[in-house]
Amino acid sequence: MGVWVHVRGWLEFHHDSQRRAFERILGEAPDPGWAFPRGGWLDAACYARAVRERHVDELLGVIRQAAALPAADADGDRVAGLFLVSHDMHGRTEWQVHDGRVHIVPADERHDYLDR
Image (cartoon, rainbow, N blue to C red; front, side, top):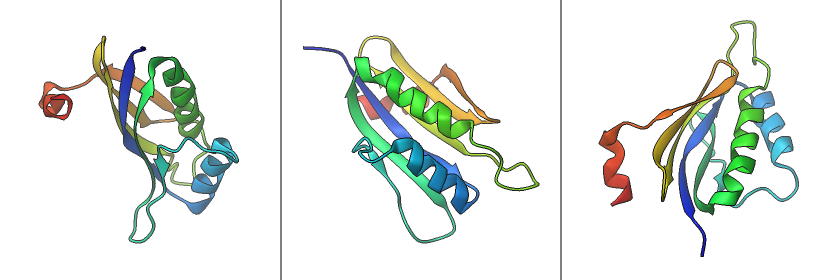
């Protein structure tokens, strides 16, 4: 049957060039969990999907590539984001995207309601 992992989160881009570079990373047939909201001041890519455990490393790899994109300007603004990852067997973690990396830390218990 397989183990499911629920992934919810977003990436924030500080310049249109970062978003376009991320779209190139996703390629011609992006994972259907990605969405690109339009309008307002925030340029983001949102992700919400339950995936099989065997696909989690692939998704994390895509997010790591996005995190590693160069700064958008002289201020050093890089891609930032947050993902809440709920594993059916191993519990919940946060993937914090900042400073060019993905930092994986235990998720706060205040998010427990999402998995009930």
